[in-house]
Amino acid sequence: MKFLMMQRLLIKSFIFSGLIMFCISPSTFADGDHISDRDLQLLRHHADHGEGGHEHPSSGTGFLRPQGDNALSRFNPVTLSLGGLMFVYQRWISPQLPSECLYHTSCSAFSKNLIVEYGLIKGIIATSDRLMRCNRVAALDVHPMHIHPLSGRVDEDTGIYRRP
Image 1 (cartoon, rainbow, N blue to C red):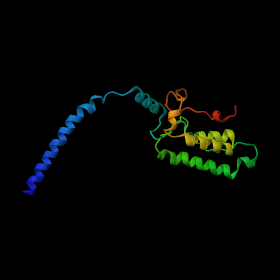
Image 2 (image 1 turned 30 degrees about the horizontal axis):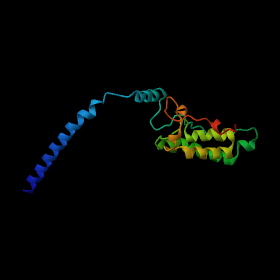
Image 3 (image 1 turned 135 degrees about the vertical axis):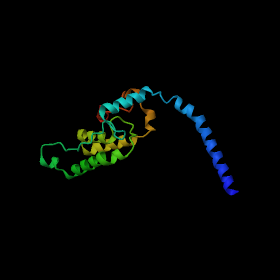
Image 4 (image 1 turned 135 degrees about the horizontal axis):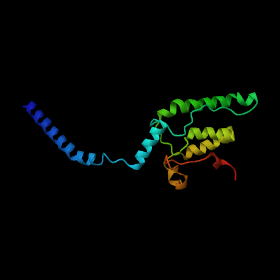
């Protein structure tokens, strides 16, 4: 008796799930052939540049090399250790994280550019400013003229930290 009830319940659940799939499938697959222009643009960009989905455009994973003529500035242990940490982050940690950065040049590559252009102290302060603005809430205050036309991300230059 118990077996027959279980069998009927199983048959009813299969019929019910089949009806649900039948009702859902026409609406699900009706627009399946339609691909938006933005999706095609992203697919072409990834095909042309050979990028995987996890990499950020303009990530720049090169090692941060100190600039200077004397040996002290080239072999400064603080600069070399910070450059090494940045390299490890960009090379092995960042690809494991989802690419949800708001900016066209990734925050870590922008940080390297800031440190090279302005020095260690001002570069770290400017980097902290950038990291505090790298969230979806900050996207509400972005002017449309600052959005990169191809990537749809905010395009920002290190020149915003120069004195007028």
